[in-house]
Length: 288
Image (cartoon, rainbow, N blue to C red):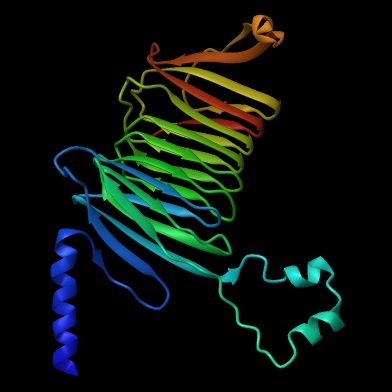
């Protein structure tokens, strides 16, 4: 039996060298997969319905993915919430044991230096832990019960959350982050000076940290309630932007929007940064 086990293990290792290396246990699933062209920066896309995503950059060439299901099964008390008649339910399930299965799994595809990661289960909260080469770019999204955290990544980052926070630390590329209910916190190790940055939330604070010598033009907006705080010395100006849309020739409407936004610059101006919240404070910090 031991000889057979060693034989199958050897086959598994040989097969994984060409595609991916799996290491499974009872509670998690883990895989390492290379890019088609590891000499060029790749793109990693990850999507969840319920759970959080944590990404860390490291000095390697493969993308290492691990998913861990949480103990709580989403909707496990739905029977009571639905108000189903207990007598009918007991008759239907008489003599049977109830088995809880939240589902799970992990789907990963790689093509043209793009790695797509998806957890198909929606019944259980799952957390994704991903290690990527430091220059990789990211597109990440989740909906419920989790934050999105990115650390030590220099590629472009695009992140979307609904009910959870977004946290960036030691990032050096362009970043676009948007959530509905949660804070957005971003600490940049450098600015590339090229692509615009955008941090937006509906209900939460925007907390951004920039290098002391960073050159940036700020576009700041608090729609409802909140204050602006800054470590940098900058003069803020209130400006009004007017947008006109005329779609009447296509059966639409003529619409005029007047948007009041606060503008300011750091160290003479430079890279464009948009910071926007509906309810929350905006904090602009200088890295030490």
